[in-house]
Amino acid sequence: MENCLCDECGSRIIQENGEYVCQRCGLVHDPILESSSFQLGSVTTGGNRKSQQYTSINNNLAVVSSLGSSIGSVEEYMFRDSNGSLLDETMQYKFRKFKTYYHIPGAIKGKETDFRTLKILNEVFSRLQVPNKIRERTLFLYHQYKSEHKKKITNHVLLSAMALFLSVRESGTNCPLTLKEIVNTYRELGHRVLGKNLLSLMQDLNIKPASSGIRRSEEYVFRICSLICSCSTIKERVQKKYSIDAYVYERMLQLLCLKILERIPYPDRGGRRPYPLSAASAYVADKLLSRKIKHSSALTQKLVAQSTNVAEFTIRDHAEFMFSYDYEDIINEISERLSSSFD
Image (cartoon, rainbow, N blue to C red; front, side, top):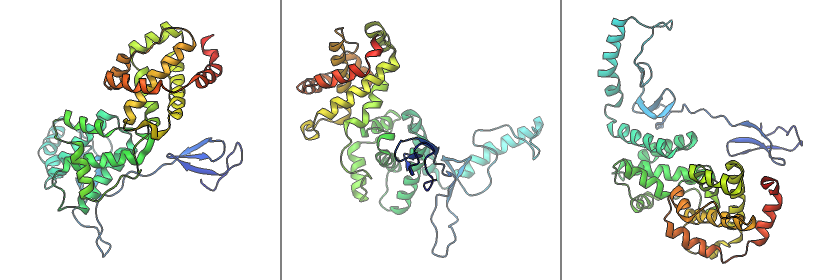
């Protein structure tokens, strides 16, 4: 596909964020499809795989078993014969009993730690709504580091949190989760995972994130605006005060936030954390918008704080800092481009 040319402009097609896109006009042609059913295990020097390796059940890498046959899918307890017809009631009972007392215990025998850790990780994925590609990468890194550093790993749950953190960092803007969110999710599930312990483990294993440096506030803009505009109270206030749809307001907010953050040089941001600064930019953007149309603002510091899970005093402190810059040209440009939204 990479050697093909775009149907619209004739330019070369390249890979970008899991899709084949035109290098010039950006037209998306096809997604990049990769097989997810791969083995997670080591290979001996003779080319033969070891007997103790892992394979996925029903292509779900979060549920692993030793190699061998499985009795239906993991949570399925209705059995069929080779023709696809349901077995009678007596046979259903026999197979159900057989699966309950043999299948799951047999699958995890000797690998109870892995099974427990991956079960926890699956719950973390669900709570954080982690994309499938990040899930698979996390599981791959977990098994890789576990096999490479057997003697150094004492806490497998902490190792799974580190694998998730590294996968998120590799993904860039595709999954802008913070270390604090990952740690808090584990702690909500009752596991003692601390940020300093996670970073210490990375240092002990001599592992560095794929993307060097700290995340920028711009990476969180789309997520911040989505959280704000999904709040029912804010939707009502936007409709009442600006008389525009929440979807249009969200797009305007995104554009303004990016322009505001672009105006603030990175060195001037000092030690401010990128996520709270991005949340404060949304409050500042709404203030500028309300001044331009001469109406009271739809967002308050309290609403922004509640919807983005950032302390209210942090929003206030960052907003005061951001208001020290001039944005008159920015708001004039945005209002001209989107003036039709207020007609």
